[in-house]
Amino acid sequence: MQKEDCIFCKIARGDIPSATVYEDENFRAILDLGPASYGHTLILPKEHFTDLCELDEAVAEKVLGVAARIGKAMKSGLHCAGFNVVQNNGEAAGQTVMHFHVHVIPRYEGGPRMVNWTPGENTEAEREEILGKIKVELGK
Ligand code: AMP
Ligand code: ZN
Image 1 (spheres, helix red, strand yellow):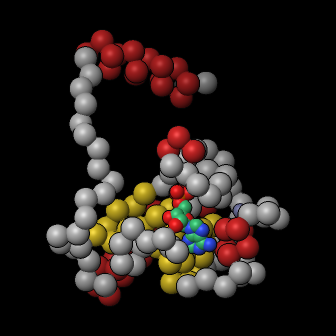
Image 2 (spheres, helix red, strand yellow):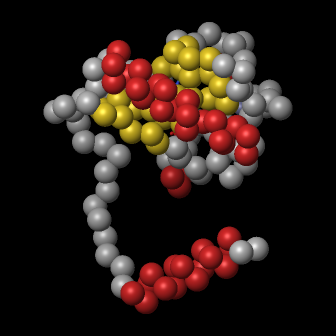
């Protein structure tokens, strides 16, 4: 299913032209218009899913394989030293386009720092509390 007012639905189905690096029956991968680095690519499912929580399981099973193929092609074709696979869910997590997508971001030696955080700390009690809260939900 697609959503009429969704820009990524229009791009994924080819109604809006895009710089497509890869396409198969489930996905179109395009160059990001505001790239974090040279070659920054977005993998878009052709069906509309808002985020990872809504993603169809069959599509979810395939998407990491596509990211791996694109990442390998970036390493050999763009000569990046590595790449990040990033996927944002919800505004609080930085998602700006509400159509599930995966970022594949080539990283170059000496390039800018990104996808970083300052490691925090947690206590044994906090860890136990967190485990309880998540595991009870997973068990439902
Ligand atoms: P996110 O913040 O995870 O929702 O990422 C959305 C990404 O989509 C950003 O990196 C934008 O630069 C990119 N973007 C937004 N509109 C377009 C578009 N029309 N074509 C290509 N990339 C886009
Ligand atoms: Zn969409």
